[in-house]
Length: 250
Length: 284
Image (cartoon, rainbow over all chains, first blue to last red; front, side, top):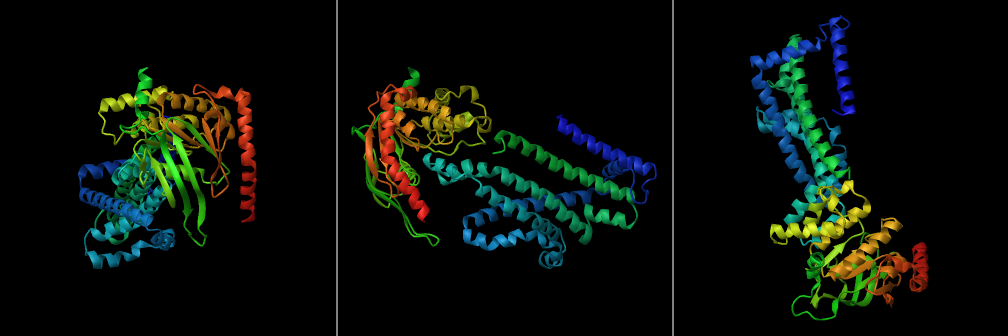
């Protein structure tokens, strides 16, 4: 492990150790926070007992659906806007102020449109994530050096060959970044939606445990969620770093 | 000798093509249409030019005189507003003709590909057997002095080496006409001189016709058989200068007294044009 990696690990371990100490020594009330070791035990028990497996799977399915939808629609939306400069000029201010809109207010509307099922939450997660993909797709295409397209013409590439052999590889770092943000936003959208508005899922179970002063379940679920999100994001981050190292940041 | 044969095959004229003129420009103009409240811009011409088979021809001129536009027209990368461009007797349309290779001023190496894959990119649509592709790529990589870096990515190379990757990518296609748009513009003077030597070696060994766009008078004087001097915009040739160098030459010609005379002549032709070009820019 690199020196920076060791420092990062040390910071996390020190923080967890401090929390453990603070909760065990009674500096923080156990009604507010349980020791991290107990959180870990609770998380393992939740998984082994399988009592919330349906909720966990439901959340992961919803996040996956929102993510895929956001990446696909965001990518093609970005392509469309890139090809239509006038439309882009019209839409640009809306994209810039997109995250000022609290998309959760549309949840009742989503229920009216899609019914009482998983789709309203998936759409909330999608709405949360899609703009990041659109913006990154536009950014990626904008930053492709014009000379690459000249090379494609000199090499007499067909339109499809140009797209797959030049355009997409050149824009890949930005597309990848868009997808990475979509993972984070899809998790936030779906979990927050479940927390406030749903009757099932990890977010709902966390809220239910909170309302019933069931700290072990609440913190166990929170830890599980943290592990999921961190694992996915760290994997994407490591992959991105590997790609960036090859390109030397170009 | 295999190496030389490997590259030379490209420069042989196609069957039935015996003319001494490889590319011809006849009465060509380029006018950019009015856009965004700006009037139409007459960038180039009318001008005529014959590129002789196997020669090294350089174009110099004031900034903005249309040098790169001329290259784009010959390459088929931009259409002429008037006149005709032909390559080996066939009119050049909106597509780059087979047998024409172009190296640009900007770094055009693909950062996601290794040096070897960048060079092989030139042959992706060639339909050649894998073994021949590998042979040509290995040869071009070695010829450009990149063998030790074949598996490196462009980000790991210097600017000069990246430009050599781009030249190698063009070389594998065995162009009969090699168009170079200020390929050494971003390099330091020493590297440029050395790259000039490599370019001369490449030109001799491939037998290709080379047209080099450059703003460096010494580069043009050192490398070329002929130098076309362009006027300020709209660019026209005000003189085409024969240098009289032997085919076997390298950057050491800079110490030849004739080099000084050629450079001085180029500057005397260009000085007034450059001053007028700057003055025109100020008055806008």
